[in-house]
Image (cartoon, rainbow, N blue to C red; front, side, top):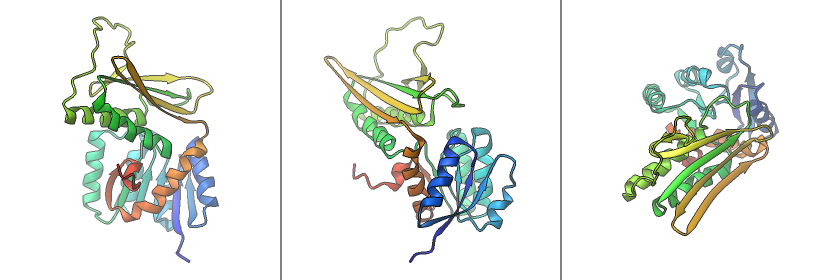
Length: 252
């Protein structure tokens, strides 16, 4: 029998963190050795003997949490948003000093959402217009979501590689921002509504046809397959991996 992977969860009291604690406790091949809340000392990660840290905290805390893990040679699986190009570059500089350490930054842990991002990327070059709508519960702290931002980046890059012109848009006046955020030329719209969990659709259009790529998470348990995949895989992938698809053999 293989030795269990020792895991520490940061953000144990949050919606995602509490689900991760349950999932890791129930899994036979991993062992929960620490579960930390906001006021707990990060040194507990080291003293617990954790091999992997799962960070499910808040954007204001995640950078220092991951830096601490990397500096101590502990792999990190990160589902917290707030990682932009500048902070990812900083993370890569930390990893250069700890070349055997792996970090996964996952905009979304739901396998269906990862596939939806990939399908959106594949389709983007074949449609004249593309926009993204993400819909979440009203307690979500950031907008647009990390998944939407990542999808927009993938879509924009695919369209640039294919030489596709920007989506047509005759709007001349938008004083209230009704057209949404412009991320790399892709309009992204954020909805916050009671009763939702996490939902996203990519709308792609040509004359006479429309393709919608939609994913819905109705319960946070849907993210746990991806969390466990990250925990089981991160040590095999030193350095930075951006997106759970980096651990999935999609063959696409």
